[in-house]
Length: 126
Image (tube, rainbow, N blue to C red; front, side, top):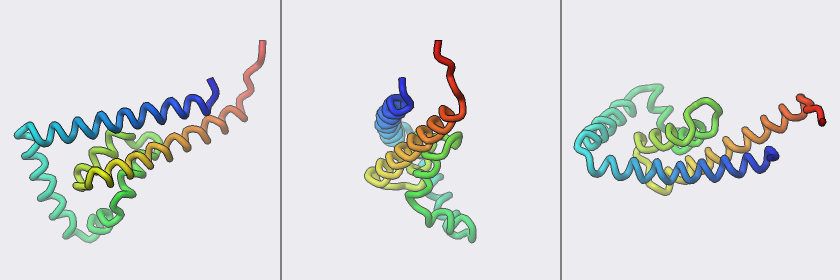
């Protein structure tokens, strides 16, 4: 398989995982009492963080946070991006756009890295 084919497969898997995790978070926060308790605590924590000097600036980056968390290698991927967007109480549209764009950007980073490594390493033909 070429690096392009692998990139497309990874991107499809990322979007399927994104839909699954989004549904999982929505169902769990609505049905379980402990999840509602956590959600209330997160909202209180977010209010507290908005009052801080550094954290208020961090919260101002908005949808770029989940995008970068999803896109950067070894930073967590779709799971962490979706969790961060739920903590930041984004709408469904903002969540799906930011994490989806992060997945696309992450796959492009993977493709560029794979193509760069393939130009360095020569595979001898039999």
